[in-house]
Image 1 (cartoon, helix red, strand yellow):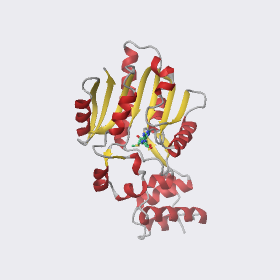
Image 2: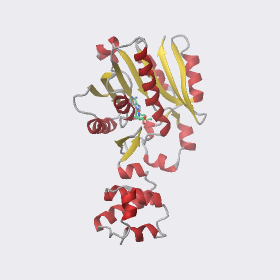
Image 3: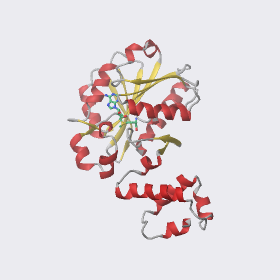
Image 4: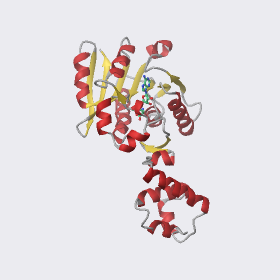
Length: 286
Ligand SMILES: C[S@@+](CC[C@H](N)C(=O)[O-])C[C@H]1O[C@@H](n2cnc3c(N)ncnc32)[C@H](O)[C@@H]1O
């Protein structure tokens, strides 16, 4: 069978998925595929393409898990079912951190920052922040409660960053419970980034797409009640650290709850709101 015969076959309605699978398994760019449409497809490649297509259509498996990678902020990250597929809004966290670092550098701060990525998952936030600001960080902590997720973060770190570039720790930890064990965190200027599970369980059950519910790790998205308890616990863990600036993602209505609850010792500032319901906030201990 040629590529053209495969692509024009009406049985395969999701042409963009087919094209992505062809690109992946033939290791070709899109334009190369279209220049060689009459080439025969190797049988082992065809088997992989058809298997991937079947998983996508019949099992509703997200394409990112079939391919094993996703693009985030211009970098390619490995993902598997222990890590969520990063959402486009989350990319703005990197821009927000970048703006903050550049602003600080312009004014009063000439040293390096320490980076904490809490609930790192595949490592997209921590690793992209380092890649975006290579000379402004020296020490970084990537942590998650899930060992499987941390293993994915390590693979991505090793793939994207030279081995000795940073003093890096991958920690299996409940949120920021580790901070008191590392004196450097108290001494330095620290940026903490976190996109913790914040979706209330009934909101997730009623609204999340079928393929998300079936394939992505529920415990990476969902918390009970108002969805905010992990953020509350993390604030408590870092409440004696006035040197930590946090960049967090949550729902718009949740920010007001936290602001009212923590008004006497924390400050919250809106960074960006998406589709009226997802908000990135910057916050710190007063
Ligand atoms: C929404 S995902 C975010 C992953 C990644 N940072 C991103 O933005 O795509 C939340 C992550 O928090 C982790 N997590 C959940 N509970 C945690 C806890 N108590 N302590 C640390 N990490 C936790 C999950 O395993 C998951 O990797």
